[in-house]
View 1 (cartoon, rainbow, N blue to C red):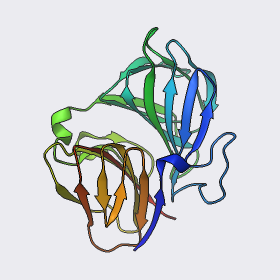
View 2: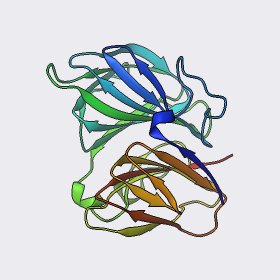
View 3: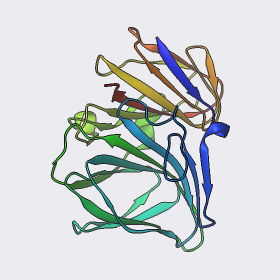
View 4: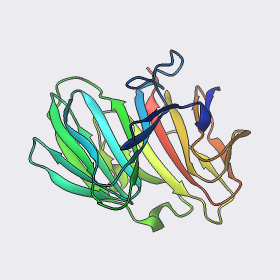
Length: 237
């Protein structure tokens, strides 16, 4: 088994007053040659956007972009005609494909919004751009892995153009669970959204992350307190 451990304090940080961003991988002005990507996972940003502020219209191409609000709500608009508010508990998927322009603003005039934004390399260039979002029930992740994103929409998940799977779990009273890989050859990158978790003997606290690959049995996960854990499984090649 191979692994990497990324502690929260060692992420890249940017403070633009209206935006406070933590980067798990090299992004914008943050560069670390050892943190370019994890397999097909290119970006995991932990953004806090001030009330009524946000990103104006900007382009993306040939990337699968997944947005998961942690607190608050995000207002989205794009040149495909989509306008929506993504709230906590929802997941948004935008397949940029041949090219798309979009904007993202805090939907509140009074409260900040905190979100994870994930970029995954697409399986090939030239896909038609598409947009989707969905509200996932809290009960579905209470003590069980809840599949949010997959290549084929299984288990009512959102679909992307890559052999990748994004799942989440709330431990509450759960003390132990396993993570079984969906596709041989994939690796999985865990982010502790909240709480304290031990994965294969490695203690991870809030916003710590760890990636594992080249393993041939399910990964053992122990919850040290009530926690939320995000799992991003991607091809490594």
